[in-house]
Image (tube, rainbow, N blue to C red; front, top):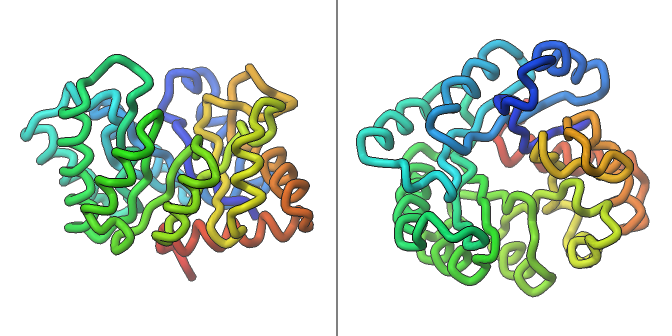
Length: 256
């Protein structure tokens, strides 16, 4: 009973065995998968995967690194795709200052537009934030994002930033980095955060956990993430699976 809250099975890394891998997930305890948008060009593929597999859902959004390719015409099309019956979130959206571009004003403009869309369609958000902690938080606060709901995906900041987001009622997405020996900061966040505000994710094909670090990631690696969370919080592994599963079902409004 595992809920994968953030995957990229539309990625070319899965072209050779996508169908075989996806079909294997339910028999390995992966009950739900949310495939998350990042580029406009791949949104149709994400929706097609969601339509083909009953346990797969879609998030529709433009990653900050792709916002320089956006315009109003594409945004209108994105809005229509977000109305697909298996779209459960707007994402991944946000800010990424790690790279030189797109310029920050462009990233902020499309982040704000996509937060407005999430509010309009009553869909929660999946937030990408890298080296942009203050601006992300301030824009989300200005947009009253706590009324919309969000997962801070691949959480990469410290306890102080975690406290800000947790106080707004958001969830933190925890993936393979928590298993890394140099993942001390994330381990501290996991220790601090209530289990009721954590969800499991892979960001596959990226960030495979130990012992598969450096290899192509997939949802099959989520037990390693859950085991490390259980170790850090000194709770049973099964409890981590149960609570993160319920958190994700509630967040994506997939309750029975």
